[in-house]
Length: 140
Picture 1 (tube, helix red, strand yellow):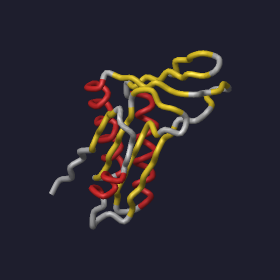
Picture 2 (cartoon, rainbow, N blue to C red):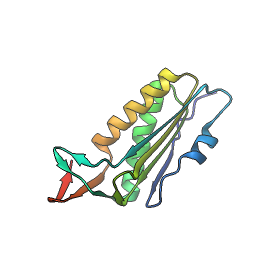
Picture 3 (cartoon, rainbow, N blue to C red):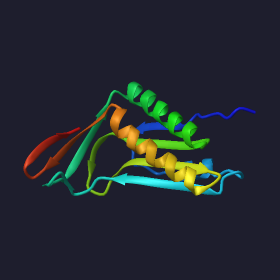
């Protein structure tokens, strides 16, 4: 039986709740179910941040995010991944990224999650504009 590397990908303007993905990806063959939330912090590159506006061309971003997820999954032998990225104006403390990785062992799960996040930041066309007391700043 060949492995299927089809991640669950969501881009949403709604608050991120990964609990449904944790339930869906908890499988009998997986001893590790990892969750990660990326949240808006109050600073970036030496300046205060009050909010971030995330934007994207949704169809293109979802396609690239799925590609990055599949490559990460195949490299680390992980079959169950869900990625949720939020768009719109987010305040400090709001979750902008939700990730669930279910794998037989934690080592593969953590490696898959790390690679996925690193590659996503490099290639997925989701843009962010920071807002702070000193004005706005586009972040690469």
